[in-house]
Length: 135
Image (tube, rainbow, N blue to C red; front, side, top):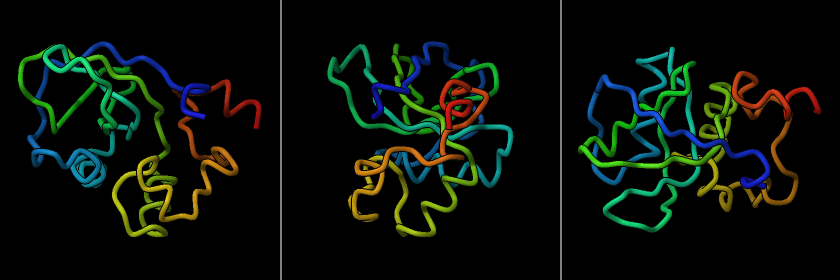
């Protein structure tokens, strides 16, 4: 499912808007939505140059597809691959599952994403027009 809609995010924003808690990427990015409405919530996988393994991760992007990563703020090269969710979908999912994160927390929603795929309104139309136009 993720491979069908994921996008590469290769450019990191020059600005650091805030620094989140270590190993709390889903929480950091969820909470940032309240203070930074201009950012969009992403989940997927990230690969750091000093750790060549894909890790489940959350980050933010602006409308120019620049990554804002409040969790991994050190100076290292990172490649991000994932999907951008709508703010409404992120908030609704968190309220329903009582968890930060969407993809890694699908188990607490009886694996609805795995069974049914992304619902209409889940993926951000600016970043996923092909999905939004087909549903």
